[in-house]
Image (cartoon, rainbow, N blue to C red; front, side, top):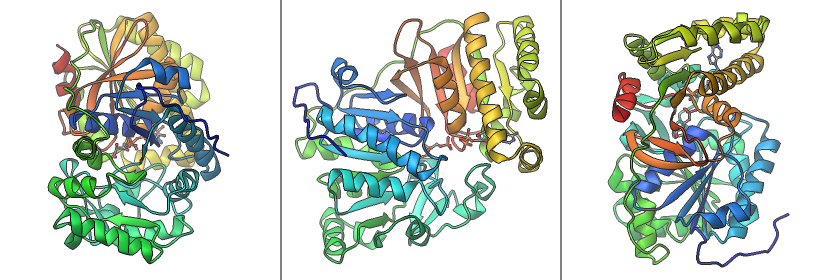
Length: 434
Ligand SMILES: Nc1ncnc2c1ncn2[C@@H]1O[C@H](COP(=O)(O)OP(=O)(O)O)[C@@H](O)[C@H]1O
Ligand SMILES: O=C(O)[C@@H](O)C(=O)COP(=O)(O)O
């Protein structure tokens, strides 16, 4: 049950966002910042006192709810929404993956419906499109580049293989209320888009999947939904919310983005993503990094022995070269590990090991610059490092900024969604700090 306590201090953020994973949250945060909003990203649910300390327009709370049981995802998301609402947020954003990562059981639909109930909202949109990163939606079908979602490599995802690109059909499995579509034809102007949403609401359509193939359509969608209390989607839409909220008087001025973190120290790349993009990026990074490929079965057998060997190796490496430690593998490698350990156990073994590696190497060998590839992987790493919040810096590639941890002994951190970035991503990221 939500409480009715509303905080109305001047410091309240207008927009409260809940993201279902950490890289997704960072992606959302950089897009909001590029739209001129001041943003803070929390890596755990903040307290009301935490929220009073930072004067921002948008608060992004990163959860790790994408691949857990729907009931757990709902309860964590509700806890986040409650604190954001009590803080005084007037608009809410549920961020999930631009590739709609979920299964027929959830968690996108069930979490969205729970948020709608909590906020007393009759209709929301589903807008995963992020054209700058190649994610578009046409006739309700999600494309990654020029491939349908289910032919894009996402059909082999280790945790949520995506086998249906038709979002209207797929979302219908996850929700209890009717699903409609805002067609690209109605995105010709804001008035038409608004009218289509209103007509659908009168027809009882609660969930509207939004077509969108370019940024001008995102701009139209943002203007059409600026009064909607709750929107859901990828990060693309967020880029234009600042402008829409400024026009409707919710946010005052356009704020400049933050600077690069200036933090000396060793660089470490940790990669647990098995996406096609990350496989290519890891292959490229081997040329300029000291490299260690994890043997997952050996970690499962003797985690502490393996951790000691890895730490000794890192200690002995040339400190001027970045360290690259990865479990990234092709679908065949992933299958064989999952057959031996089970899907969930394999993920847990790797995530908890990479978290420990991050702790060891930041504590013992002077790592202060950290790049992590993979949403679940990033979630595990920042949790184990005990980082509570991030300041958002400039963009490395679409959807991935440099960030700086807030607190004593800050780290420069880049959290990369598995699918994002070109083949030279790791090099580009570290060169920016050189
Ligand atoms: N070699 C591997 N075999 C099996 N599972 C793996 C392997 N490497 C990583 N994983 C698991 O696959 C999942 C990848 O998810 P994630 O980190 O979110 O990456 P992405 O951003 O590409 O989705 C993680 O749970 C990770 O622990
Ligand atoms: O929207 C996106 O594509 C990303 O922001 C995202 O959610 C990242 O998820 P992972 O691919 O699991 O890192």
